[in-house]
Length: 127
Image 1 (cartoon, one colour):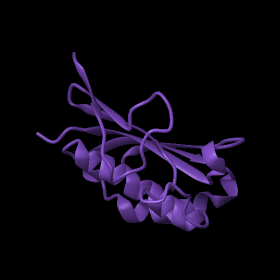
Image 2 (cartoon, rainbow, N blue to C red):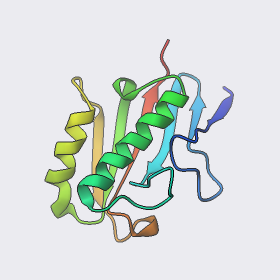
Image 3 (cartoon, rainbow, N blue to C red):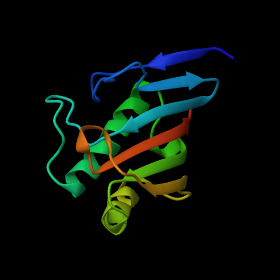
Image 4 (cartoon, rainbow, N blue to C red):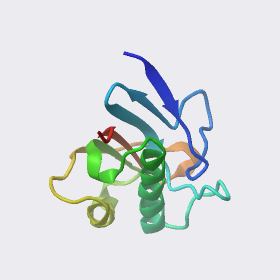
């Protein structure tokens, strides 16, 4: 099975030796996305804005891969503070519809750029 890198300027560029996403067969594996604003490279202001921007970035990467949020099968949400879970969950719920993707949520000691939330996804390629 061949793999192919996915890249778009509609989401923040990789800040290290990794791809924004990789397609392997019928799956798209998107790297974790912080709430970075693509045009400025700066974090959005506050938790809600970062969670929203993170999911917008994920959506843009999936669109570049020829798929979308409706094809996401698994997500992982990394939170700086698990006390923020309810707020992030509300925003997350506005981006996804049933059947919802499988999901894990974990609190981490620190995120790149001192972000408050990072979200990664695995999605199916649209047929």
